[in-house]
Each structure stands twice: as structure tokens, then as C-alpha cells.
Length: 327
Image 1 (cartoon, rainbow, N blue to C red):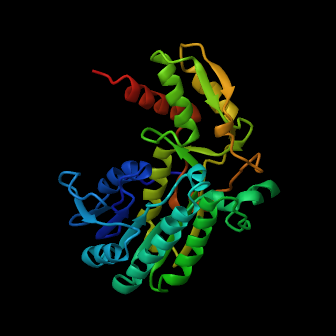
Image 2: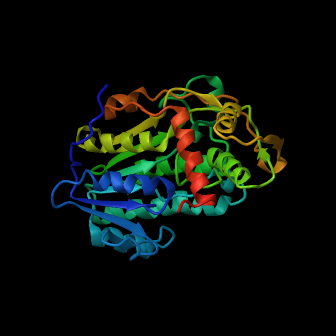
Image 3: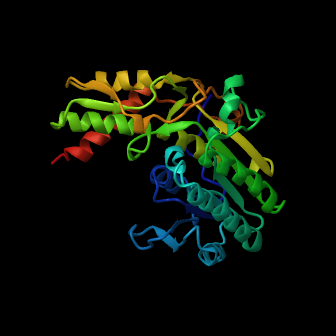
């Protein structure tokens, strides 16, 4: 399978929400590199004016007037909707905020699309977390029943359904359900950078103990660079897609959290010990989450390229640079 690396995106005005986040930081330059002549890439942000020459628009997903004004001003033919409360762990103690952003905010955006750009394409990033307990029945395909088990995953499932209902029939909806993905720039709410940051601090002289939660879970981990390549490749083919799309995005391989930790520890020259921190142990009734992403691979002409070792090495190096900045 050959990944398309150069076809310009078939859009004239692209609006990206959540551009300041982890995925946005990787996706924005990838989109910029694929603009066709004369096309605009506009970043929706609460703090416009921080990105030099890049075009921005003031945007607050919790403020209806702000969202409506941004969509009306830009009139995008593609909205890449990344803005969300993106942490399962954080959603456990912030359910109201999670629903306000992930569902109510997305509803506001959908209404603005319907009012001002009813023919636009909306690219919505959901999550494989929507399958929840259905993972215990086997490999999840897009036809697998959703059985979410957290405020985060329930809000993502609800947002998918809402967007399908509220967006006009003339709009195209592309909802992707990515598996766990990581890379440089991700914060310590997520398991791989949490491990890597602790190792980097130990290398810098901290107590040689790595605090962990549940190490037995087995998940499909992707490199954020592969995820971004897949998104851009799919968007380059968006005009050939139907009006409504739901696609899993995954590597097709699973690995235990314990193995992730083992590999990271092996990349360090310092001796470390592992201790279980009850605060990090999140209840999980899903020992294995395996995902079929064959539909996405076919639609995007995509396959992941990075090994788990390459991903882990890039994250550990990123955390080392944060803790011991290079001259």
C-alpha cells in the first residue's frame, strides 16, 4: 500500500479547532504543507496572535457567539475539529466539563456549520474508547456496538450521534475513532509520557522509582506521526467519501503496558525500580482492546510506518529535553 505524500488537499479554507493541543501541534504543519495555491489555513484559538504569520481567529468552544462568529468569518469548506477534553482519567472527576466541551461545544459548532457553511466537510476526532466493554467480545470493527465506560467515551459517542443528526445532509461528516497515540509534546496525563518523564527525571538525579498504575492492560498504540499521515491522506481523498463516515484508526497490533515500561527502562542507562501508585490505578474491565482499521487503511491508502520502539525513543528524548534542556 502506497501512502500519498503530495496531493494537495481539495479545500480552499480550512479551520482547525484545538490547534494548540498535542495532536494539533503535529497536524497543523502537515496540513500547511499540503495546501493548494491560494488556500487558507485558519487556526481557531482562544489566544489569537501567538503564531506569527499563521492566520488565526478568536474561538471559544464554550461560547456560542464566539463559535458562530468564527465560522461565519472564515466560511471554511473543511473544519478539522480537534478541540476536546481528551483525557479519560481527567473525565472521571470532571464529567460536567467533559460533556460541556465534547458534546455541547460540538453541537454549537454543528449549528454554526448548518447556518453558514452547510456544504462543508467536518472532520471529527472521536475515539475507540466508545467501544468500551465490547472489546471483551473480540476485535472491534466499525459495526461493533458501542458500550462506553467513562464520561469521556460516553461524550464522544454522544457527539458522534449528535453530529450525524444536526449537520445538514449537504455537509460531509468524517468521524474517526483513533486508538491510543503518542509522541513528542504529549503531557503526563497519558501513560507513555508519564513513564518517560519519570525516567528522564531519574536520569537527572531524582529518586530511582517509577510510579505506575495497571500494567496488565493490552492496547493498540500508534505513533502520532502515523496518525497525522493517515488523517492528511484521508482528507486528500475526502471528495470521494460518502456524506457520513465512521472509521477506526489503529495499527492493528497490541502491546501490554508492562512491555511499554520494560522497553522504556531498557532505553535508559540508570537503574530503576517500579512501585504501584494507587492514585494511578484506574478501574478497567477491558484487559485487551484490539481494533480492525482495514476500512480506514483502504479509504486513506495508509499504513503505519513507525515501530513501537521508535515511538518510545522519540518520547523519551522529548522528555529528556524538557527536564535537561540542551544548550
